[in-house]
Length: 192
Image (cartoon, one colour):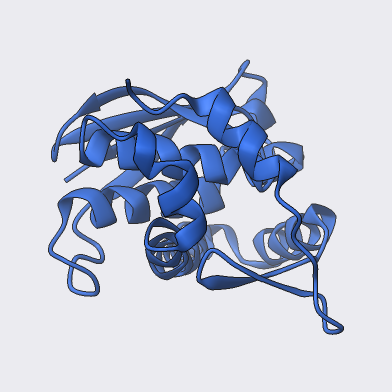
């Protein structure tokens, strides 16, 4: 048996998770906030619109880096949590590949991106596709899947980089297709 994405997503969605009085949700060894996607997308769009064209690439790199660092630490919390161990780990038969599949199932269950791995070469390359993700709603006219790019690098770092916390920034991710530019899905390619 390998990780059955739909089973994991269904089990995670059915878990009773409550936010505290400050809107933070404790679970999976992390705290998650309840701010709407529109908040983050508006924030990102305003920054991108405000930066001069010659500095946009730098800002994009910083947005990806924010997601990378957050995804690395959050991802580690997720894959070491009791919830992950009880739902995903019983299905793991292919080691790191299945842990990655499980991490993307969590990503989907939490509403961050309807995403999944379509190709993986252990320790070298991974291709992720997502028909829906946070930044897909940004009407930017350019590929702007910064969050999923950073998190995809982070997840691959956790799977194939040095042990946590030394493996950060082992891999990088580029976006090759995007819903926000009219493609049917976003595609994200992780390499060394």
